[in-house]
Length: 267
Image (tube, rainbow, N blue to C red; front, top):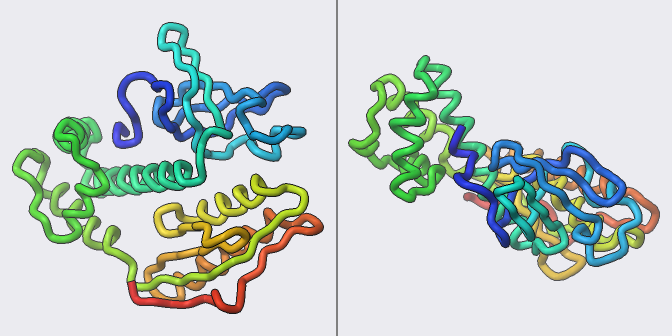
């Protein structure tokens, strides 16, 4: 679906969502998810500022991450990308943006299936009109969830539009509860990169509702939204378990600090 795709060819300096396809001796081959799987190369020198002994300590087959385009040639279809030039903030913001796009695409596909509406009609009469007006698609759906009327320029069957509004109201309403914890993380062997992997693994549970932010090294805030109190607490517990699975070497630490025990608040 074009909600997930970008038009044109990747530009230098652009942040891209990429999935690792192969790890080779001098780098890794990735597919660019927003560009129909166009392949790009991450040279080992662009993986980390530190000396890289094993590329798989940073990039693993099947892993989805954020990379920065450093060279781009549409004539030869060659793209070189970098991991080390992506800041934590850039990574988190890009993954958050991607998770919203994925959620929007899945919602639209579900409505299409339930109502039997052909995808080419949805592309022509909903997706493309939203894009041509410079609107953010997820924000557009959020407005429907908040009671905004469907614009007159959306020309789709009534059964589809009614189901779309119904699902937006049900699925895009802000969760009622939040669970939070302050977690101390450190890694004697893996350092910052290992902590970053632990945070990414945690957030991957549900990028749209899980956020890991630094409070002040080595303390990190894990914030999880849920449908209800039990759901939020369950996600938070799973997040911390995932962190411990990544930081499992001798000398690694994942500790929920007493002052940051699981605190619940109304969303």
